[in-house]
Amino acid sequence: MAVRWGVAGTGAIADKVMRDLLHVPNAVLTAVGSRSAERAEAFAAAHAAHAGHGQVPRAHGSYRGLLDDPDVDVVYLATPHPQHRALALAALAAGKAILVEKSFTVTPAATREVVAAAGAAGRFAMEAMWTRFCPAVVRLRELVADGAIGEVCTVTANLGLRHPVDPATQSYNPELGDGLLFHLGVYPVSFAQMLLGTPEAVVAHGVLHESGVDVEESVLLRYPGGRSALLFASLRSPAPGEARVLGTTGWIQVPPRFHYPNRIVLYRDGHAPETIDAPLTGAGYTHELVEVTERVAGGHTESEIMPLADTVAVQDVLGEIADQLDIRVVEGPAELP
Figure (spheres, rainbow, N blue to C red):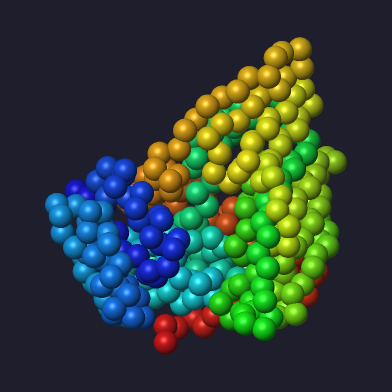
């Protein structure tokens, strides 16, 4: 049986992700939800091929209409971050599985609320951290687990672009989850958490926009045993987008952009560098969509690759960064409007 997908939100990220559904066996896009019937209809028409058998996905002019659709098994939440909380809780209450775009929510409390609701409902829930499912990153984790670079000591990662905002014409809006932390800053934090687990201390330095959101941050994470992570993200300046995993007997380079790599390079003491190619399928979202489709079809409630405990741990670090930098964070309501 095919797993029937619905998507909440019709923005650019929803468009990119759902285009990769064509590469996923036993997955079809059956419905689209938006606060605008016109946008829902346009998105549905543009994605007719992803519905299978040439059918146009059903268009709903409200999120409630999407969640009440009996022909939807799993909902991909691609709305602004502060809306994730209400949509996730409502989707779970409606009996749907959920794939929630990163960052999961904008506060640790809301993340725990959704995780608890998923557990109580017995429904699948996962954060859409596509990086962890990229074949190159899967291979990196295998090499680390096999001891290819000894014990991991340090993780470094940077990700930046120049995104100037003209205060005369536009600004960042905290009520929409704008700013760096929940869009780009989550990537280095999640990458470090994947390899080192939960830190025992967080030290953050950053730059705030006049709207109260962050536009640059440098973060040091301290772990037991003297391990550490050195992370940088920016909307003020471009950065290579590279990550490195440093061990006691070698290191692994993840070339730009590390959050969707096609290859890694293994450096081991006494050996020539080894480049490992691992191409992405489609735009790279295919791999997480396969994971969700297979887990939902199999009746699972979590992914072993992106478990909810990791999402909670990452959100805790984001929350600590937000507190230390005094970022203006606006969490959305628990109920759909």
